[in-house]
Image 1 (cartoon, rainbow, N blue to C red):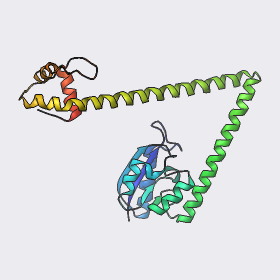
Image 2: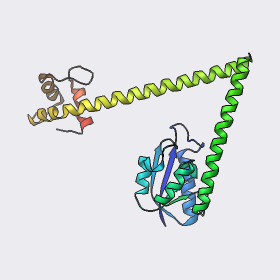
Image 3: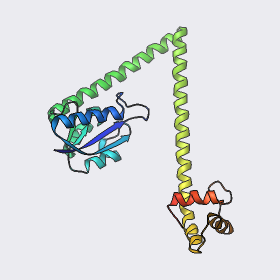
Image 4: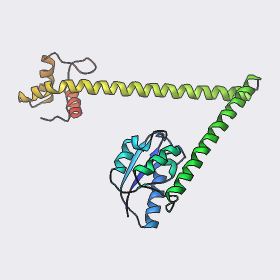
Length: 231
């Protein structure tokens, strides 16, 4: 039987369940070997498990092959029983840690996983509430733990803000470079053969780089690479 491997982590640093991509691949390869399955392709992505599998770019590619999708553990697809139930109606999939499980068993395991997620969430809320109460009562260790948690959250938000800002900046640069493409090609049509000649041509047109400076040979080279344009 042909199948397509699918591996997922929620964050770049570590998977939601502690399983990194390499560990997931080992599960998939071991299950394929033991069951005589042929893995024809593997798709990998870093995305939250709260997003429906059929809304994830790489999973959509995996499912498009028309053969079963093989994942390491059921939670790599989702911990949401509704996601799993809906997915069963749309595509076939296998789980490396329980390769012989039928749809009923998979649905049951999904329900148990969702229940455990709810239990973990409630235990976490209760623990944080208890910690905050001890800190409010003046316990020095609890006060420090609350502070450490607040500092970590603030750092995480700052990193997220920086990432968003960088992504926006790069998108703006890409858009601006696209507007320069016809001007760049016009200069090349004038049979210029050096980066300096192209820079001179763009500068004469009154065009500037995304940073607002005049074009240099280095800036032209970067622009040509970004737009996949050559002499």
